[in-house]
Length: 299
Image 1 (cartoon, rainbow, N blue to C red):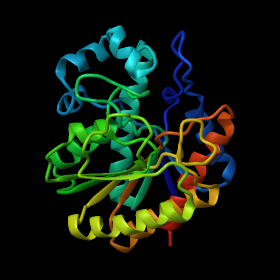
Image 2: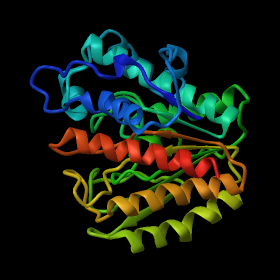
Image 3: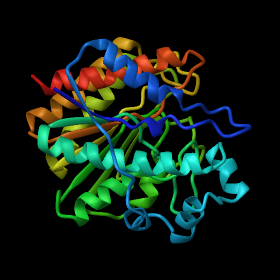
Image 4: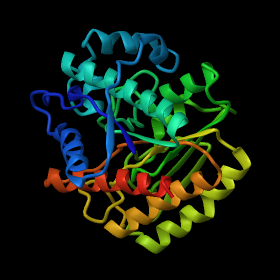
């Protein structure tokens, strides 16, 4: 059984003047339904403000909650923070949290949104308003649900906001596997960064992952993995600079889940990045990632 977190509020109206569209989040839900996979859909609650303020600057959280984010910050985000976007962000935060709880119970669960890894302490950035990965990881530790959390970020872009928000935490390990020359131009310092060269294809990417991940799992010994499973390393992604094929993405996801499963580590995935003019194909890539993770978890 696939445990999938989704809310109709994930598909927010696009703010005026923004090129970013939220329709892929609904299309992912449709693609999973069309797959025929037995699925239980769980609706999240908005993340309580106090948990967001535990990692983000309180003044910035107040700006988001009032839908009064300064234009300078909205330009960094890439769209205006309207009331609809505020509610969507709070729901996505709650979705990653709910997926983590479901993973602790069932071994694997997926949030059909989330992965907002560019959001920094006092501003959003790169289509990210609030950092669900940092918020959920901190809450897992603070509530005693996990003593050690690994955030594995395989988006094509470095998880710079996550790295900054969680810097120096001995109980949360941030591992970012990304295209070194892609956004952001100025990288943060994760617990471990694997910067990959432009155009790297399946074999090279998977070799880098295999060289890195097992040692982190064995030495850090996380009690849960939050997996930013962006599909923008795909060779056809509009904002990617790597060369993975459909098959390469599937092997990546099966490798990650297999490594977690063999060590009995629960894993919750979040959607992350994926960009292109064909929104249906981008959504299909995300759905295939979720299905590959679920299939491998069931082995």
